[in-house]
Length: 540
Length: 65
Ligand SMILES: Cc1cc2nc3c(=O)[nH]c(=O)nc-3n(C[C@H](O)[C@H](O)[C@H](O)COP(=O)(O)OP(=O)(O)OC[C@H]3O[C@@H](n4cnc5c(N)ncnc54)[C@H](O)[C@@H]3O)c2cc1C
Image (cartoon, rainbow over all chains, first blue to last red; front, side, top):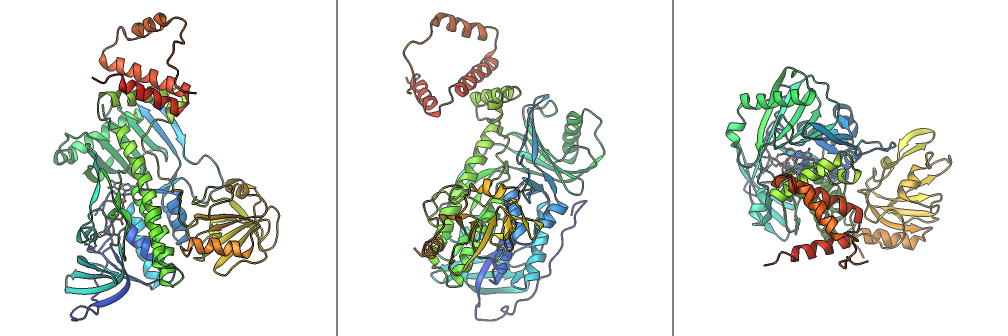
């Protein structure tokens, strides 16, 4: 328990299968009710797919873990009905500042333009996100959440997997047609399948302290390199709801975690930081949570193994600079949900799921590359690396080019699925595989957002500029965007849809249910649209 | 345009002298930062990744035993 938050305890419900000699059967089982597993269950339920979710614990995540939720994640939670809660409770930010020694090196804005429903980032403790996900899952009536249920063994076979489950009231077995392994960085499923999880450990340690205080720092990300109050190391400050502040102190590889966690020591560090940052006496504060971490980057070679599919930290792990862990996992879910639902509904072959592998491995590699580069900048590996790092920071104060090299974390951005097997080549404008950019529209005179009209019904969308083709094949929702006020259309009154999508009148853009661009057509015949649709379902 | 390695400076001795002058009073760490700033400034001025990679490859070769 922390000072500002008490974890809920979810009751163990005795499953009917306990005590039965026959294994239970379920179509979809999700291992792990973390942020990724819960999002997976909710996404599937929204598509009418029921699931059983098992978690060894009986509560949401403890203490300081993810806090920064990126715009793309917020858009996905918007689609899942939770976007407003994130905005209302979370701390919205888009600006950051970088300090070097005793001076500000520069400031940046991650979303300088207006006209998006969601901001660049919202800070929110991971446990809130998970609590809301549990509530939303329960409300669907399609998610069978089984707490205090540990997945102890997995026998993988061609029809799915036989799962051995351990509960406080005994053990039972469950035959899953599909097993979605969302069981985190220490994945039992990964171990059971004996899959290597390769990458690198960064030789550095970080003290992460959550502090409760009333302070006037703005809602910005502040990052210090080598500040007088923590010489030779970096410090990161973030604001969270409930007057909680996250402070990360880089400690170096030789630090002793047990010693560094001692409250007196942490309090002294925090006080020095507060006084150094504000030049004033530190306000009263309380420690809410302290932990010491070592970070690593690694991933599975493949995320899909027949009917066992990995998502989130079980599939890939990154260092937190850039907030790409949880955000990356939520995007895995966004990619997997509609595909699995299409396979289960018989609309696509199982091979569609290979595209999950291709697309999300590309994204994971992008996340690993970015977070490795950030970590290399923050923890220079030798004298030359140190000299270059400091040189960049010195130049950043006066020169724009060097600011772009300062790397205190390349903050999570959605992957453009370059080379996706599901995209139909051709056309021009926004790159194929790009995530849909948002823009303001007017619908029957009311202010609305474009993204709310793409994929909300779980289907493919044909975004039509100026005119809807005479014939649109079944399974696709057409959405008309106009530059004047017309009944049934989205009025691009600010011209931002056309600009951000680089669209011309007559363009018809096919979007997948996860809002990624699958085809750029122009005044298409029905057959052209149908072919692009079939390709996006992996049928061609 | 490939990396130019034929003579281009009107007064190479003057450049060499200016470099030595800049480093004269510096300890090892400061010298390294000075060189790093110089490389970064010049790299941005050149602004062509192909040329920079070529220069980097040539420079890396230059210290082979
Ligand atoms: C200090 C820190 C800061 C971070 N900051 C950010 C950030 O700002 N933004 C961001 O996006 N990410 C951040 N991350 C990363 C983020 O926390 C993780 O990427 C995210 O929690 C991964 O979610 P997950 O559901 O895949 O795994 P987890 O959250 O680890 O959930 C796994 C679940 O599986 C359950 N489980 C495991 N094994 C079994 C088993 N055998 N049987 C049954 N259940 C099992 C566990 O109980 C758990 O509930 C941060 C991480 C750290 C450590």
